[in-house]
Length: 63
Image (cartoon, rainbow, N blue to C red; front, side, top):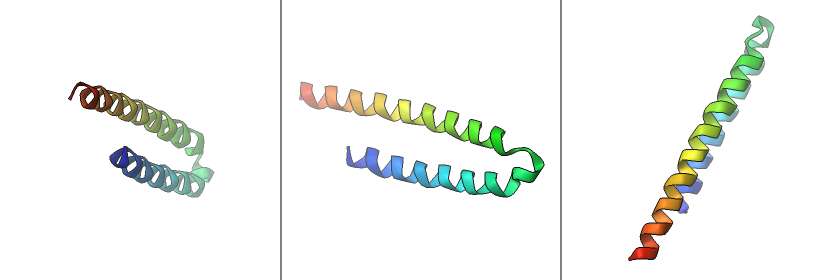
């Protein structure tokens, strides 16, 4: 679980950076696109991490 927290913290920093870039790029109309893409990617990665942690928990339970 410790690894999961570290990775999600890094991802949150990445999403924060994307949001700052989005605010800077807003006059060009890219803002909503960047926000949508970043949240989509973050959601996919988060789902993968939950799946991995679930598998790790099952593996630990077997041992």
